[in-house]
Amino acid sequence: MTLAYREFNFDGLVGPTHHYGGLAEGNRASVGHRFQDSHPRIAALQGLKKMRALAGMGVGQAILPPLSRPRLDLLRRAGFTGTDQQMIDAALLHSPSLLSAAFSASGMWTANAAMFAPSCDSRDGCVHITPANLVSNLHRSLEADETADLLKKIFPNFELFKHHPPLPKTVAFSDEGAANHIRFFGLEGGRGMHLFVYGREYFGVSPVTRYPQRQTLEACQAVARLHQLPEETVVFARQSPVAIDAGVFHNDVISTGHGALFLYHAEAFADGPSVVDRLKKIFEETQHRSLCAIEINEFSLADSVQSYFFNSQIVTRSDGRTVMVAPAESEENPKVRSVIAGLMKGADAVIGDVVFLDLRESMQNGGGPACLRTRVVLNEEEQRAVPPRVFFSEPLFDELTSWVERYYRESLSLSDFRDPALLVEIQTALDNLTQILELGPIYSFQK
Image (tube, rainbow, N blue to C red; front, side):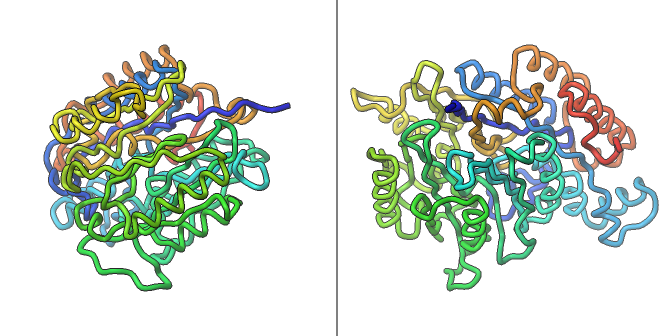
């Protein structure tokens, strides 16, 4: 029996400690809003509305709960002593950025959480899952083991789902997850083709850049091997150093793809024409059709970073129409808006419709629509193995909206972390969330 496959967007639910720490060097929006007041309640509601919009189109939609924060063990390991309150007070005074890292809600950007390979792609017919080690940034490196445990809870059948540990936590295997990966396919449920993008080679020569080159070729190659992807379906491409220094810290800020469509900026790759030629050749050989690769050169790298055009989600609606889900910033940028209009124009239009969403709280922290989700392709049997309450529904939307409005603060600043009531609020909220999602105890404070 052939099982039907469906792509799901697993969105990260924004956590109650959402704030602007400016911790990600090279992410201009993040650094530019450092220590400004954030609005956790609005951020979480914006994320839920995005999920609702996607689900309303008939797109597969599911939810990943936030990681538990703060990680006060980080402060203790860094030499702070005393009670929790004493450590927080001392860290705020002596190392506010370290305190911000301990409270970071960056796990909301689940494009970085892990890499998935669907069972229709892997040689052994299993779904493969590798959590990203995220060693490039302190606050994100804390997530790897927690994410691994969470994903085992969400994908619990170990005969269907093969869980690999994060790659060795060293700069040689610096891994940023699916934000540097695109899966193309000609037929839903057929074997896909994979583009892995890296910034540097640990065992080779890499150009010098102002901002970090977060992903290594060695990490990309390791994940492709672990996930048992046939060599003839994989392409590795180096990100342009010029793009990195323009603030393109991940590939999903400068190129995107869905199905047989590939949109990329003219300056996305170090050797763009060669990369595109390889993708076209391998796509035709493996998918038996042509890849629609469209180079965008009508706006600059700066426009790409400001608008997050390439961080839009491209999805197929239930009626077969291709839709671009873009941030409001793309509509507000005249050059970018013109390009989107062109993609929707004429008989050869590659985009059928566009939906602009307000995600400013995430955008100001450096993450757009695609950052908030990771794609997971599942067949019917695999879907049944996932806890059912994590799949989006209108009743769940209503319940989570009420939950956010009850527990999340309207605004949050770094000094608010000193409030003892905040820790109680967070644990009460997350404990209630696990009951809503019927996941049982998943947080350390629950065990």
